Amino acid sequence: MAISVSVVLLLVILAVVFLRNGALKFSHALVCALLGFYLASSSVAPTIHNGVTATADIVSSLQP
Image (tube, rainbow, N blue to C red; front, top):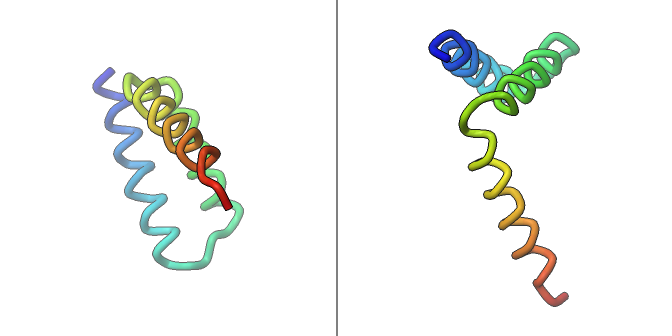
């Protein structure tokens, strides 16, 4: 678990740097995809899923 948390933190830092740089290349997109896979297999996955689901429910209930 400690190794996957370290990898997730490293990938988060890299993704933030790449996005702030504004030049998202293929390698940057690959890092972001790897971040998604590591987050999906981590212990925070249910929390992220619940947050996204709640946000989607709120947005879908808004009237135009």
